[in-house]
Image (cartoon, rainbow over all chains, first blue to last red; front, side, top):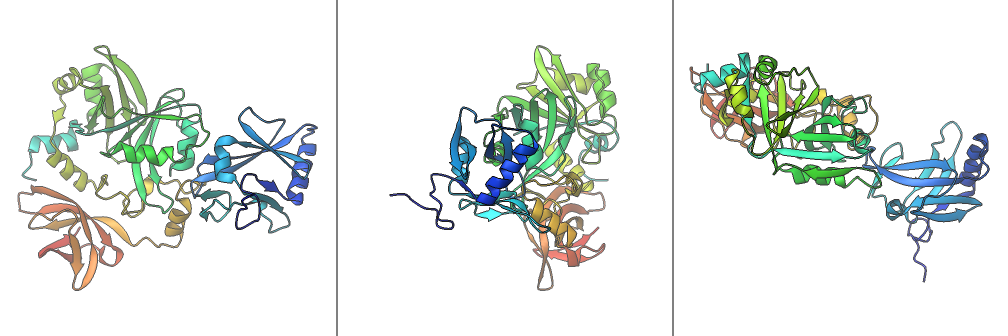
Length: 120
Length: 314
């Protein structure tokens, strides 16, 4: 049986990106002239709530990265960060009031105002 | 003047006083990401702390309460010494460790194997130069070998007095003797406490700790409000912006010594609590204490009561 994260109906053994977020990643990669690329999604210490999301377009996974493919975009998540990100959905909101990439993370007990950091 | 040892108080104010820390907190932090991680976790901008320089910073919880205050001494490339007044290094270590995910950063507790001596007073640099032949400038870090033992000197201007921390492998051999010969004066904890109260220098587990935020604890100068996010930043920024800080550190005068932790009242209202009482009286019989006092009672000459003893806000 697959366990789903309660808030987002995403299996907790993976993370997902929405079609809009995937499209934005492809656009950023094209702007950088990258043909082979993937989205690194990681976590580092810091930020108002203690843990900060890290997003980076890279040309391939590192040895300890978990590889997930969604909407045609490869997502690389370091194994140490995966425990904080399992079940997360990455979306993109644009427009004047848009926040850019947004994380819906079921592990986050508290999120800071700007949405870039969280605590578990 | 106070009934403490005049020579000791005089050393703090006019000479060079030596304070030996009985239970020091000395932590070594090594790794490419060590400084960047501390920059992201604490209140002070630290990315400009280059090798050979030092800066004091505050580690707060995500509720904006103080976990610890420490000097970040950048002793060499990718190696930091964290020197704190705390007697509990595990709290600081776990506070940093908790947020270390994939960073190249490692903490090692040196508190048991190293000694910390603080040199305080306007003639500190003169004494160090004369006793050890080295010059230490403000907010600089200097390493030297002394009798085959590595010694680190870190100057810290953040308390508003001349203050140099010396970290040496324990037991220290001859270093203090050399400083005493050059005119430094060894002091005891009562006189150090009185000096701290007179200069309103916040102390660990007294004015700051998990019962207080850094603003009310008198650590405002250790917060960089324009540096961006760190743990607890939203809470601290909101307290400052909306002037929500309810207490501040004040010096109280009383005719009898107050008790640490004792409540302060004014009529039926709670006015605060005593954080650092001095056991030494002045020659006219006054005792000084530091207290966290609620805003409404902070005005100079306000009178509060502590367990039947009347105290006046300085």
